[in-house]
Image 1 (spheres, one colour):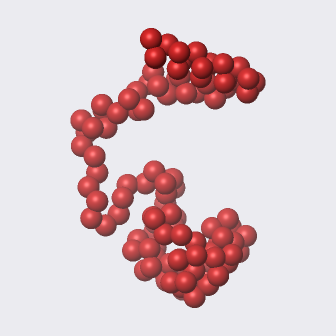
Image 2 (cartoon, helix red, strand yellow; image 1 turned 60 degrees about the vertical axis):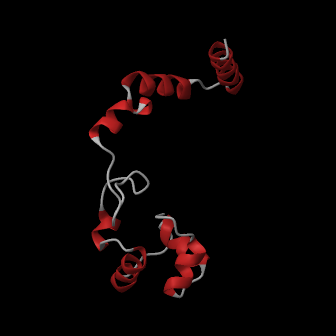
Length: 111
């Protein structure tokens, strides 16, 4: 998360990467003081850990600018057509059928 490995994060707060993994996966609880320490190391507010948004897709914090509305609207991965296509592809349970579909799409593109 935020470009920092579990090992480097553990080193920064005096823990092993295994302990960081346990925190990350929810196997161990994180105390308030440790949570505060993590927020300082990661340069995020403590509320970051309680936000309902996906941290991978959350907006960048600290000096990064958000893409313009034009960039967002022009992104082909955000179009309804693409979302429906990906959803339909993921609904194909048979791996062989999915592979054949990918091959078909690749063949159509190369012509």
